[in-house]
Image 1 (tube, helix red, strand yellow):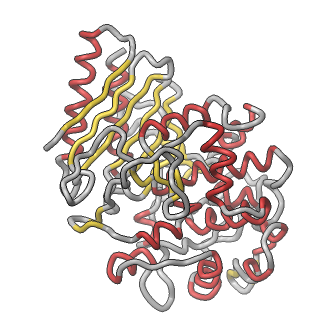
Image 2 (spheres, helix red, strand yellow; image 1 turned 45 degrees about the vertical axis):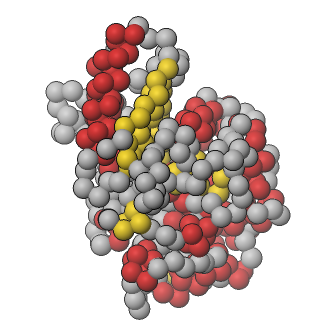
Length: 396
């Protein structure tokens, strides 16, 4: 299996070589797992004293090798970018986080969207609910409708399909059931349930408030200002710098060719980027450089709500306990029960259902990024990242 690595920084060479050898071993073990066709892992210290990108495997079924600059699908890491755009518009007075979604979207999209137990709660859903997954809305992508298979399973079984916000609203309103009423902002403990529907609605709000397609808003508010030249929303535009085709997504041992679906996932999962660009974005986000006011980032971490244990089949593929969610941002730390002798520090960022991750570890001032591009590997980041943190922590 091909292995490639890039290393930089000013750490002493002997120490750096020992650390890279341990990281290379972790990468090899990750890439050797069942169904994993390729992997990329990137690590960077906040002071730039150490930076490493390792890749393994073939990017595409034609045998093209993975490279450190191979772009890949971010999957739900996209939500981090969508949340950043929403907060930038909030800074500029275009979006009020506590305003109801009905203030920004037409009745055709909102009427009867959240009906539960004979009560329509749609008017109670705010932008903040969408950002924090506290709306209770069903997940258009993974929840099982009353009359068939979830959309995700249909894609795997039947092949590619496209949809838009109107299709999503019809599915949510007519075929799916909400999980709970929208949670009041002042309750001590809010219920939280991950739902791609929330971020599709946020994308629609961004487009309505800017009168521009989402990919153009991304370019104007994030990509060009931050110099993210290898990032784009799949199927809508090209990256600012010509890059190779993104690494192939896999479903088990089968390549997943669903370009229409990926194009439809713009706001909740359609981003393509290189590891370099993703690290640059997270670094700018953590430092407040994404926003006009650096303190705006604090809104994302102001309140954390912990996901519950899976209670239905659909929730098995969703983020769950012990993961917490702020506004567009996850926080993950293994409980002391699982690491009684050597606690693993918390990370903040986001993961995706294809085994992608983008995290910052405040305790170690460390940025982490990677993927295995395997749709059956959503749990991989939560198993792999703690191992990565232990290696980096022990290196001093």
